[in-house]
Image 1 (spheres, rainbow, N blue to C red):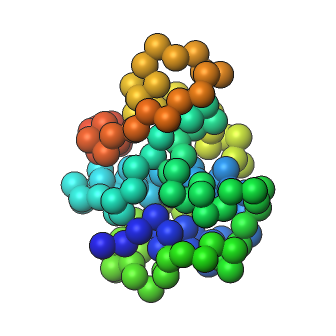
Image 2 (cartoon, rainbow, N blue to C red):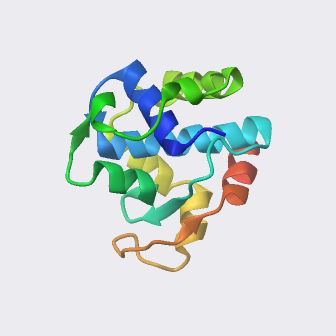
Amino acid sequence: MASVFDVAKYILHIKGKMSTWKLQKLCYYCQAWHLAWTGEELFPEDFQAWRNGPVCQELFNEHRGHFFVDENEIGKGDAGNLKENEIESVITVLNDYGEMEPYELREQTHGEQPWIIARGDLPESAPSNAIITKESMGEYYGGL
């Protein structure tokens, strides 16, 4: 099975250097839409409902301290680990979301049920490490 690092490496290979904020959201959408389309997770790592949208803690730990990253700055992962159907999911997400600005991706995730449900009654500005469940992601995006 692929890891979030494999997906991040592939995204950066295709799109080039980008903000870590955007990379996190693109990885989130790759996971969400792959779940919706296949019923299977793309990678095992979870996303948390941080105040600026979904964040994978493991990926954050890898790029901590950087605002922008390219594929050489993510030490973990190998884009070659992705299967053909996983690549198809990532490419489709990049075609739909890849040109969006980080703040647009943030605003979009803030209006979608998986992030909203995970945060519960917390104000938007409050910190949170609540898990956005893969079940909620699959159900929500699968219903669109």
